[in-house]
Amino acid sequence: MLVPVEYKGVSKWVRVPQAEDEYNYSQFLQAVLAKFNLPGSASLSLKDSSNVEVDSDIFDELLKSSGVSFKAEDCDGSTAEEEFSEGSSVSDWSPSPASQGSSSGSDSTLILDSTKARKRQLIEGPLDSNVARDNVRVALYSKPGGNEIFKEYEKTSTISDVTRRKMVNILVADMVESHGRVPPMNVRILYALGIITLFPKLKDPDSKNGYEHFYDHQSGSGYLAWRLKTVQRNSAQDSKKSRTTFQEGPKSPRSIRSDEKQLTGDECREAISAMKHSSDTTLVKNKMKATFQHRQKVVQDLVTASTVLDLFPRFLDTPGLIDQDFTMIFGEEVSGKFLSKWPTFFKPRVIADCCKNLTPSPRVDELLVSAQQESDDGVWHSEEWDSETAAILLLLHLLPPTVKGKKTSKMSASDAAGRLIKFMKVGSSMETFLKETGPQTALSSRMQTPVAAFDELFKAHYVFAVSYDDALSSFFIFIQTTVYGIDVGKVKESPRVKEISARLLHCEV
Image (cartoon, rainbow, N blue to C red; front, top):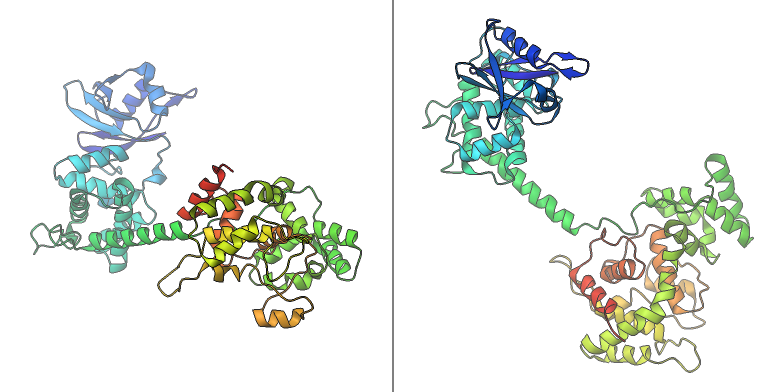
């Protein structure tokens, strides 16, 4: 192991002798004497950062721990400081003549300080040009490209605009890493002072302190100040994006939760071709299971997503395929949650909450009446709501659309309901109906109840990786997290979704 040792203001790399997997204390002291050209008869002792003497019996253990610091002390009481971290190597800290400071001889030198010690010293300590210089030196050497700055300065006695920008970026990154996005003023000053102390020909002779072009605390200007403002602005924007971006949902890639063997290559292509020309429901379902993984790649790819129904046209006429794919993604338990929980658990709670909290209106009153009674003949008529559908639409009134952006007009819950359910008269042409409602593809459903049809509608979002309608986003996220239990804690729920979820889960009916 190589460690940097400071003796009377000069730092050099010293190799720690090792014998039988143990670092030797006495041989290390001899190596220090030799490195600094001290007489072999001279006596040195080591102390830790708390000024406690380090004996030979604990030297090996301390050396192998991380972040340990020592003080090397002559018998006459003069002191020097040695500080290193486990795993340090010459390649980690590539010295150059510009970094040697007050060192003598041809050996490369470098002063290292632990991050915590540096941070405390910069905030609490007095304005010291040597501390500032060493802080900047360590920061530059610790980051990729920092060594090139020293080489350019050594060669040209200055640095170019490009290199100066690189240096400022490195130092601001180090400053933010150690002191946060808003570092104290004296820290900023110390970095600026460190630059002109380490690179004296960058000093401005016409300014009061010589470093104002890097940081002027009176005006808040300078290269370091400007870069800090950019970092703070970008950080705030990133934080805002992270708060508004949905991390999980229908479009998120999912891993298969089925032991079904998946086909690839020619076998997969043959299975897809066979399904297109078969009316055997069992064969179609089996081959759809075997091509599930391939189909997920198709729907997750923006280029191929629109072709999924061309490749797998059986979605259009074979019942149960959407539920089958959804179950392969989430498993049987999650797949069955809506049908098992909505009629007996959620529906009565939605009705009770709406009776208590929704503002009365003709539409709400109509839905409440329908939700609390069944039609006499059990037939779903266009002029009236069946109980299950009415309860689903009441939930939409509890979670109405929200305005997103200044240019977005507010949409009522009744208008949003038109994006969830549309009625067509019996005997009407489906083709004509679809033309009137806008460009979309109809998937045939043979579900016997509105609840089952809605269950299939929700699942289709995940099977085809389709985002929720913006106007129905809060409504569907509630269904996703509270009813199905999908991505709980991973997807962003609005305060309103969380509020309604808490109310319904704790409601007594």
